[in-house]
Image (cartoon, rainbow over all chains, first blue to last red; front, side, top):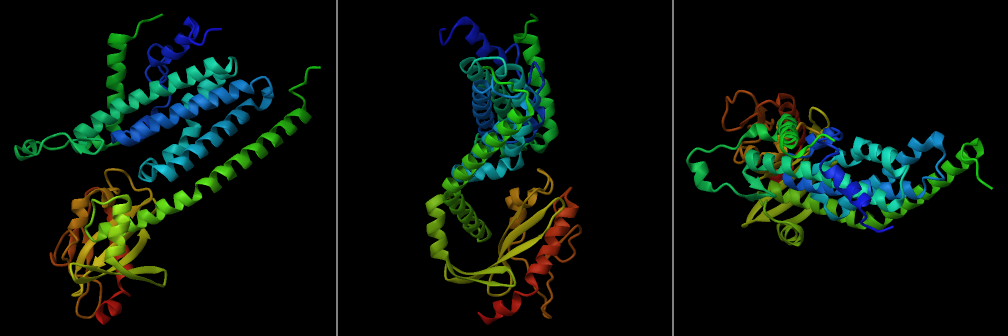
Length: 207
Length: 204
């Protein structure tokens, strides 16, 4: 089987558009709201979820035939929890300030509906390689929304992107004020709504 | 022979093996990364102390070097850490603070100059609401409001306060809007943490 057959390509691209985890299936909203007040934690969170979804998918897919059906959710949770713990330890060791910013939300990846959804719906029935693609696709789809929302909120809420000031000082001299409301979680909900709206209007086609 | 993956024995053995493998894996990761994590935590404490001394733009090795240059000695009394520092020839005492916010612990460092006024302050929190209680950490301009405030009156009582209505501009700091309970926590933390510091400050 070719690595990038038509079928595999669909597995990878579907979650980026038609079957998007946030836009199409409306999963994983909670963490999308919490970590997007700035761009950097949003990027790190997106990457963490992508890595964890991909590897959890691969591991579950490899052992899928040995998993006792009655405790399959338990097994999935153990795999995800182990991966999440490892990622959170790595973040603490190599990106301490980001891990402080993300605080509990890294741990809460364990309960991210996207992960459980993909493990149960895809990895349990498919071979490792398509499962890997599916995991990366879904993770990137999730990361994409986080980055869009994070960028808008940081730019309008703080006038910066990744900590660099983008709105020049003279704008502030003329009375421009950062929109403090953008830093509130409620604005993330509204922005995600706007993104879903744009996506439905221009990119989404009913099957 | 095909294994019956639904038999009780299989399920028990399967879970036992899985848990042991995962436990070893996590223990290994934890051990391997611990030195780096400890170093990060230690660096973070040093950076917080530097923040309280109004040195906010340093990171990594630069912060380490500056810390070594500024902080002369550290001591501990009743769980409160004190750091004797020297900046531009001035003797500054930094005291650690611990208190309760709305949702969890809050902490901080306050730098006191030789005449008993605030030289700088930094506050941290564990789980205050972003945009409200978390402003005690995120809003640098709020922390800067403490600079120059009087800490003790003549009798040695702590007068530095975080209040809703500033009546004594020399010692009162306006509280964070929308975060009354967290601000009260900061106020109590200051009162509690500073009441025993003064005798030491006078000795210098």
